[in-house]
Length: 253
Ligand SMILES: NC(=O)c1ccc[n+]([C@@H]2O[C@H](COP(=O)([O-])OP(=O)(O)OC[C@H]3O[C@@H](n4cnc5c(N)ncnc54)[C@H](O)[C@@H]3O)[C@@H](O)[C@H]2O)c1
Image (cartoon, rainbow, N blue to C red; front, top):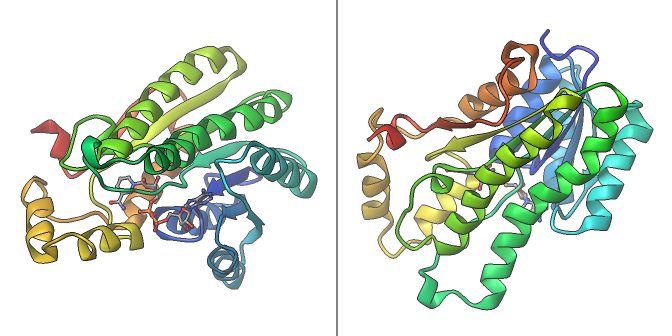
């Protein structure tokens, strides 16, 4: 088991990529702190892990609020005694062109997608320093690397996550804390399905999203989870400060 004895916090673990990763990390021996804004969803993830014989607790958190993120880290350490891995994965998309973007929409996208990552790093790093190192993985997006129609608030936030990842990586490399981010393209999660369903022409949107992916399919959440496992484990021990596309070839075009 690749994460035996490790303690991992996963935000946004009530759904999609976060849930798949929580289940995988627990299977690999980690004690998992399932953190999410939505309690019933997070509790379902914990129940799934426990039903499979794994170890997990749920903590409700809004990643955009400093006091709640600080409390999330404190609860993880009080419960399991240490912190080794943080997967800053919670996020949301609020599609809009810049001319349609209200201040509220802009602020929400930046607060959850970007500030949430900063706060996670801020409170987790001192705990990782205490145990001699750690691994932080952030979920950015291919939209942190390239643009896409009507995604101004999301692209701005995810682009920020990519460079924040590199910046934090160099500040804390000497503490043996590795910091990397994953840049998925399309992943079959509730977020992805909602984006298609709420677009003006769902069938056309689905076709447009698929056409630009060389592998010609969307990813399964488990394919992002296995990348997170690689970055969390010693298999990636010399990798820090990278933005890794897991995108079916999209950003190679
Ligand atoms: N699905 C995709 O195609 C795709 C592609 C690229 C990047 N991403 C990114 O992957 C990450 C996970 O997305 P997903 O597709 O699994 O989405 P999802 O909607 O299935 O899951 C997101 C989870 O985050 C939680 N969350 C939202 N706001 C929160 C907050 N303020 N505090 C705590 N938790 C909060 C939600 O409750 C939900 O459980 C996001 O950062 C997203 O931007 C997704």
